[in-house]
Amino acid sequence: MNIQLFLIKKIKQTFIYAHIPIKYNANVQQSAKQKFGDYQINGIMAIAKQLNTHPYKLATKIANLLKLNDIAYKIEIAKPGFINIFLKPKWIAQQINEILSTSKLGISSVIPQTIIIDYSSPNMAKKMHIGHLRSTIIGDSTARTLSFLGHNIIRVNHIGDWGTQFGMIIAYIKQKKYNNNIYQEINIDKLEEFYTKAKAKYDKDLCFAKTARNYVVKLQNGDKNIREIWKKIIDVTLQENQKIYKRLNVTLTNDHIMGESAYHNMIPKIITDLKNKKLATINSGATVVYLDNLKNKKGKKMGVIIQKKDGSYLYTTTDLACVKYRSETLKADRIIYYIDYRQHQHLNQVWNIAQKAGYIHTHVSLEYHAFGMILDKNKQPFKTRSGKTIKLTELLDEGFKRAQNLISNKKLNMNSTNSKKLAHIISIGAIKYADLSKNRLTDYIFDWNKMLNFEGNTAPYIQYAFTRITSILENSKENKKCLIKEIELKNKQEILLALYILRFEETIITVAKKGIPHILCDYLYKLATIFSSFYECCPILKIKDKTIRHSRLQLSILTAKILKQGLNLLGIEITEKM
Image (cartoon, rainbow, N blue to C red):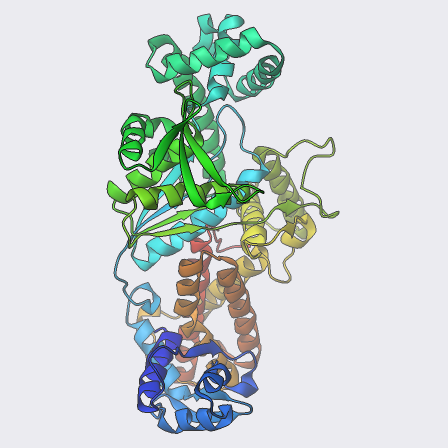
């Protein structure tokens, strides 16, 4: 049950009884401290100010009308105008009992939406680097969470596969006559070498630059030989990327690839349509769309070019076709973009044009989920000692080595295969959790020592908490199917753990709504710490009373299930031995 949503509905109903205008909303939050109850109604002071009444008086009126006798043993009014709600342990136990008898940990069903999530988007002809990490794992966690809730998720890995860089690389390959043995000679390292040398040549050699641009035209016009080389470049890059996704436990596959080339045939019709609708005009040979909110320093309208005078298209044109396709063909209700923060203005321009042209249905939610940078200890962009951008393969290899050393130092009794598997699970979990546990809007400092620590808010701490509970359940030697289903909550730590179990749904609803996995990380960490306190204060295996023992075992089972499910939503694996 979503207690927060339940209370919001109850309070909105109470507002009607209290003759508070319907435009005002109840602000229900989990209480920060236990002395303020389990939940707190905030925002009454702001409402009182609008209604020109005293906040304490209004809070008292609301509290007296609030019908929560079935679930709360106390409703407390705190000055200047807060309402604190203390839930009945018996009611909390009833909700836990319901969870035990349902699937999906009691998560309520949703009205399914079609949600498109655009994330990762690595560069072609290059290895993925650390700059792709945040988009990839935050986007994947959001996709997992929304899918778990029951929405129809369309994952999209949008790649730039149609631009100038391909003309440069193909021109270089042709010039160096690599084309004779192209399928044997090209790998990702070669492609990076080709790109670097081709870019240098493109910037200095006008003849080479012209040849490269001509190859782009040939590519887009379907030249068989050029398309063959282009496809090889794409295939080699995607194979390399898929290795990274597999290591990172990311759900993207090649089936989710949608390159710029996929929208190429739509673009001429869009250009014609925008002209017919008087949204696009010709200026100095280029096709331009002027937007009311886009102005230069002098306050004059600026135009967004959608077709150059030589007939070529820009990223804006492709992204316009892309959002049109997602709205009209894929029937999206919500489109979420996890791309570089520098693309925000560009996206807004695309959305503005699309909305003016009627390409996006009015109900569609367009969302840009920004994310900060990964920094080193000096708060500079995280790079190698030589100043180069860190490749993801290098980062993951380093994490694996450090995890292996950690396991070796702990002198765990396991064979080489199991040791390597554990090192993989720990290292990938640590890297992902370190990122996902930070607010995506902020930068964060990459610190190997912190992320691989078994203390504090880290993946190893939560993974270990799961294995600890698994061990408790194994040592109990109880048949889970034979456990008494009725939960009894008498001890303070039992109540606190049960209440926090109930807050799982509230947590993932917030994550799904805002795309902020750090809320889930905070929840899992606190759940693990609360369980630790519960285990210390509430004997499980040694207690003779069967009802109490079974009740505490059920709480332990639920905690383990939520830790496992929560980590899964983050794309982090668990292990039963650690």
